[in-house]
Amino acid sequence: MMMMETPQDLGEEWLRSRFAQPRSFAPVTTGDGHLFREAEALRTAAVLVPVISRGSDLSVLFTRRTDHLHDHAGQISFPGGRAEPHEESAAQTALRETEEEIGLASDRVEILGMLSEYVTVTGYRITPVVGLVRPPLELKPDDFEVAEIFEVPLGFLLDPSNHQRNSVVHLGRQRHYYALPYGQHYIWGATAGMLMNFCSFLTS
Image (tube, rainbow, N blue to C red; front, side, top):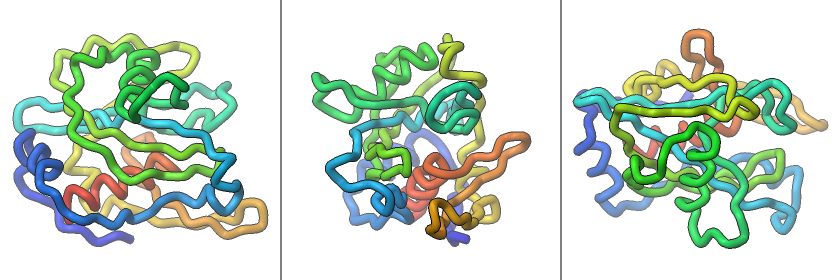
């Protein structure tokens, strides 16, 4: 379990200050996709980590993927996907994919910064882009990709007592993965790994 100090006062200015202050940061995990694929076979992707601001309350938005998708069916994820050849930045990819998946317009998102890349076993090199969003939210989920949209309080995610580290044998190799159960939702795998980096970045 990762031990972190949870801040008492969470708000927009505190969140902005964490990205405004330059500092070195070592990610908790970079994923273990490199164990199963060569670097040149990885596909570039980006996700948006949408932090919803309601006054002094911050929460993080997630989607639950539909059960028929080829990759990560039924799992909890951030909105995002594969980069297009014409896109010049991870932020462009994350904002486009987010608008396509959940209908959140890019002009409603204040980009704060980026987190360390995460490599998945499905062959993606993902850059998480952190964005601040203020309600009201006028979301229109893509029914083909998104089964559910929900939020989790940032304070819950930052609390070390809610972090789990588990292991499983996959293709003959032992894999370790993080998990953050929240009510009926089980956040694990790549999403939980990126969340652990996000939490460590904010509290380091």
